[in-house]
Length: 347
Image (cartoon, rainbow, N blue to C red):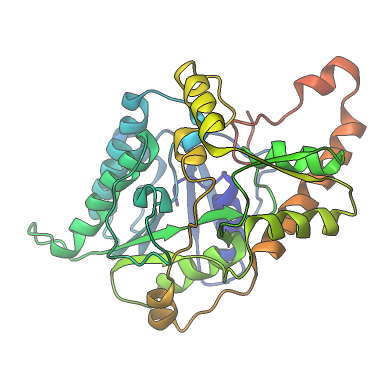
């Protein structure tokens, strides 16, 4: 499993280790804050851009590969960095999977490949005009995985691509650190647009369930994954504020001038939101998940508000822990940065 110490990776490792007959080799370029000690698990620190290092990290025969590692949209990297990690790194993972005899490669892509949706819900056949560097390189990586299903090199291997909506749950950091901090302090929450659009999440526990099932079930191909979404963004945020027992109020901002300002800040590399984020902030963005439901006989167990609240509760617990650990100036340094998506990795 690549990306094993990240937000999704840590949840995925723990999910797999609940099965006594599964052994996991985890690969990531960052160490875990709290390493997993389990005879079924081995963790190796290496960079997927380095095929030689990948070969050293895993030389045993494999049944399957779960490929989670990527440079996220909030990393503010160059196109070359995104290409090196998300595309060339994926190519290296596929090469290793073939060398070690894996029968299936499961890749977590992103709903950002759909760009700015013009209608919802979005099914897997919809056009894929990604907006930024992240989405475009994730789409290129998808092709490498899906090409396995029509491979002409004599290697029999299934390629499965999962496109989840925004993955949320305990340990999620990134831009949501800003939202959770505002709620925790009962500060104003600023929204782009009127907030009547629907914004879908994927609970990390549901996503781990889907990935686990695909290890042994399902046909190769492309699948959307997400929560059942029945409320709009205003209702979602109001639900979080109520859950937290806070007094934050939601202020809706005019779309055009805010997006113009964010584009300018983004050009200077100082925007709190990336292009893929602010360009869809006021749009309905809901995936049609009928295909994965049929294929795996699966339904999501958690709603949008449940997974957002779960992430917030973890954030609050972590904040209380940090208060005990850091004071004064050290508290400003903290362990987590808004550009760091996972709360489970060392910086």
